[in-house]
Length: 62
Image (cartoon, rainbow, N blue to C red; front, top):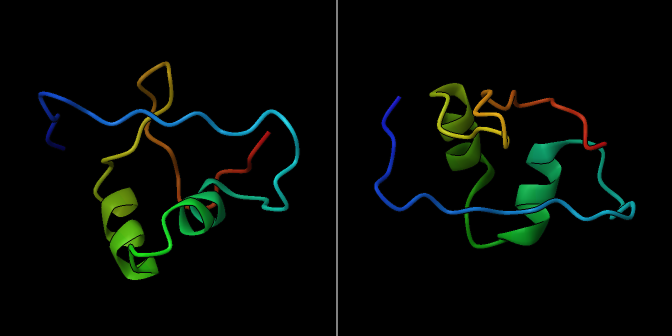
């Protein structure tokens, strides 16, 4: 896993946005990025939460 010198940060909505997983939210928030690309990045462990724990593809939005 590579760590960017300037990683992007995104906060999930506090209210139910109509999605159940982090992947669904990313697809909704960034429609220009293909689902396959998000899946590649998540499989490579390139997304983490505030505790630096890798986010799994099917991780539920709380």
